[in-house]
Length: 132
Image (cartoon, rainbow, N blue to C red; front, side, top):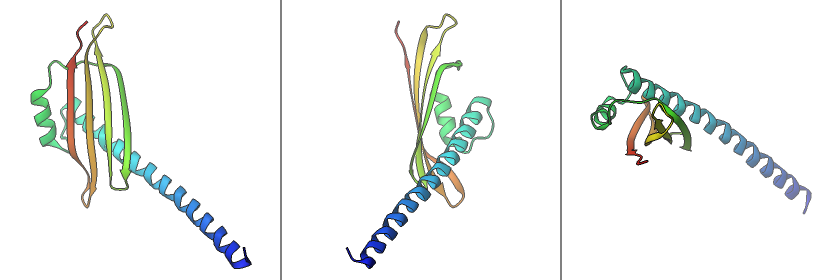
């Protein structure tokens, strides 16, 4: 390799690695934004406050088995797709007072950034009673 080729190579390696770190930091901030919107949506659903996606929530509320229980297990994972989109998967298990799981639920939310902020573009919930 000649002198110019070596420095060009070093420059590209530095540029690509720095660009990768910048993108990773940017996606972490997107993940934080989606997490905040998802928590706001969950809080609205649980406490009856105005939700950022009222139509989705109203439709889901009409189909949701009542009464709501407190999850014995709740796990939320956030997946960033791009700087303007991501999705959330929440899995919950509801248990009776004796600790026996009687219902499982999986909720998926797809989020998209618009010029007016983050909007949920899709919500799906699957609830299954567990037969013991």
